[in-house]
Image (tube, rainbow, N blue to C red; front, side, top):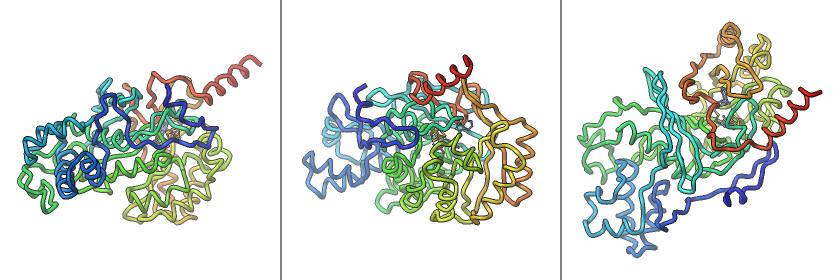
Length: 419
Ligand code: SAH
Ligand code: SF4
């Protein structure tokens, strides 16, 4: 694929992803999804509208796109009938293409999606009693090679664009039938539908939360993730509160402060180990940004407080990171850095050829107790959607070839077996 040639192949831990604003379409029209109000206005002006008209139209179109979720210009009832074909000739309202939709016995849903240039990626919806969480991807593949993660065995194919990222949330709203249906009354004063008599109550929504925990490392695609989440948080856009959005990073320390300042969502950190030796092995970015640096960046994360704790994710790997001492060291570290923290214990989800096993349930329980006794909440996350390979770390599109790292690993294992 010619696109991949543009990407400098990363070494083990030093990726240089290539930014891209919009994926070009064969028909030459421009997909508006993923673009800001301002950018849409600029495009309207370039296409021939005078500045005042461009500004007004961009506000109207923005509302229809992101707040109402319409997929045709014809549905934009406050835009003159003659103007709608003008829009249709030049622009499209895109959605990621759905290649496959799967439904787990436990209600979890997984979609395999395809970009306009034929790249596959995945998103997962996880409903439970209290909320419905959409797990959103930020990249096709991942440059990092965390050893327990299936996505990490893929090459990075490319970053997703803002449109492909926000498009996942929009597609989920399409699939769940959750776009507000009210009138346009709220547009002028910026009020949303909850007040305009649209009969839409946010409490009844299935999709309530978003986690950037799908494929990829969101902080290696910072600009696109930020721009997409801005649309999700915009009161006249998808209007989801930043308190309901969580960004998970494996520890891209230099980008963490900016994430707090420019995005401001909840932070989750994939910690997974408490010593340099083990973290170097299982989360190789640790060789670049070590534990101390990472925890210091967490302590400085803007907006973290006891009311808004940082989540530390910890995947339970048998005989690797799951001892009593590990649990005690985890508590000590979190206290040393005075972190408003909660710990999420994730039972390891196996995949074919994975080099680890999950800790026993007794071990996970004991680990959780020790952390809890240290004064830090440490619930065990129930694996969801295992029957459709939708659980944490299982996302990998089957069309992908093995990465160089995985080939090296397999070669090593073969050697060891032979020797
Ligand atoms: N790249 C980001 C976000 C995506 S991964 C990050 O690493 O934080 C989302 C979470 O799933 C991370 O905590 C990751 O470590 C965890 N995970 C990956 N593979 C897993 C597996 N096989 N079993 C359980 N959790 C896994
Ligand atoms: Fe990438 Fe996150 Fe998987 Fe690590 S755990 S390989 S950072 S997706």
